[in-house]
Amino acid sequence: MPTYPVPSALHFSGARDRFEALLERVSSEEALSLSHEDLEDLVEEDGRKVLRRIIQGHFDLRAAEEADRTAPTSSDGVERPHRRRTSRPLQTIFGSTTVRRLSFTARGAKGGLRPLDAELNLPVESYSLGLRRRVAGLAMDVSFDSTVAKVEDWTGTKVPKRQVEELVVRSARDFDAFYDHRQEGLLERDDARGEQGKLVVLSTDGKGIVMRRESLRKETRERAERQATKLQARLSSPRKKRNRKRMAEVATVYELESRPRTVDDILPQDDTPRPSRPRPEGKRVWASIDKPLREVVEGCFTEALARDPWLDRPWVYLVDGNPEQLQVAEEVAAYYGVELVVIIDFIHVLEYLWKAAWCFFDKKDPEVEGWVLERSRRILQGEASSVAAGIRRSATKRYLSAKSRKNVDKCAGYLLKHKDRLRYEQYLTAGLPIATGVIEGACRHLINDRLGITGARWGLEGAEAILRLRALRSSGDLDEYWAFHRRRELERNHLEHYAPNELTELREAA
Picture 1 (cartoon, one colour):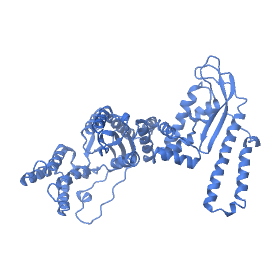
Picture 2 (cartoon, rainbow, N blue to C red):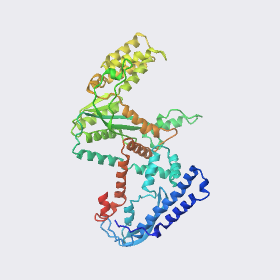
Picture 3 (tube, one colour):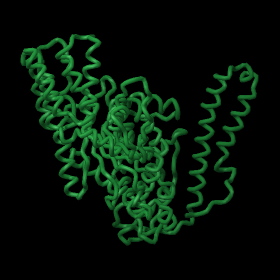
Picture 4 (cartoon, rainbow, N blue to C red):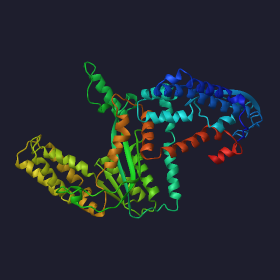
């Protein structure tokens, strides 16, 4: 990489002129009568112009110092001896700039080599990586339309909506490669065996996202089309959107201190405060609307294996009872030889119990709470089967109709079906978690808070990219990922086009 002398007045004269003009303006009689807010607006607008001139001056300096650059050799071994001066636009966080550089070509060879592009790590598109990151950061939280407006307001650069979506997709393209790379690094660590007392906890769940019709899975798309045909004569649109949704698979892996508990710690019988619970450590959450469930579950296991490659610690799989998730998890566990403790979420059990309770009580009856509490405690004590039998017997003795006792039978069936995964008395004694709060929270903040906003309908690529970016931020990995993403951009956009002995300093830094 070339070195540069002290910048000449020529390249930065425009920046100096702009800066002097700004100083003169803020010290003028007119400025002395401004409020602080008006002064902020003035300095922000003119200051951005100064910064843009500085960036442009730097690009011009780099271009001037390229004059003595030797002809590079491409990855196909062909030297590019012919040189010509070219330029390209670059939209930055400070505004529009132009990068002038030498392009090296050879007769009969496809494409040219532009070493300065590599040294600057310029992206393929006309928007800088700094602007790409700001777009991605905004799009994680607000709609694409709002992102367009906020980017222009904050940077002065107009990025159309379609380009915003493309930048978001590009920003997330190295998600899988990043975690594969990090898992390899964990396996190579000397301390990869980890702390013996920590549990390895895995959990998965599903959450529907409203999609554009072309992005639905085949069966769902066909149902949506049939529904649309039936509803052509309706004056109002249907409320239900299930035929417009595609299921996103949500996953989490974390470590947890094993802390034994009792039934009274979960459901105290008096006002005694509950003991504090251990906090999840090293939590990683993610979701995918593109990958099938098996691939997401396998991702859980590879992440967990990177943390506990020798299978020294207890592994816990928390789930709400979804049959497909249970089947896939058990198959993957058998493949990897993992002894997996599968636990049904106690909160889901409570939901079934409450629905059954309303078959016996009138709405707002205060006694219903005691009924639910008594049976909840029995379930925590390992009596799920007897609770199921008892509520069915009560429904029969009260001569409830099949319709009136529907939720009773559902609850009893759920308890009996999963009785081998409802051994809460053993789990509490062993210090294992019994609730899926982490994965429920992940469904809420990864999906609902952004992809579930009113009126949103998603394309497959855009939804997947937003899920990945939000997952990186929720897992605390966004800064580390972005550094990895920048290196990958340098490699695929530039370094792979040069011979191995070219741009050696850049290669070593990458």
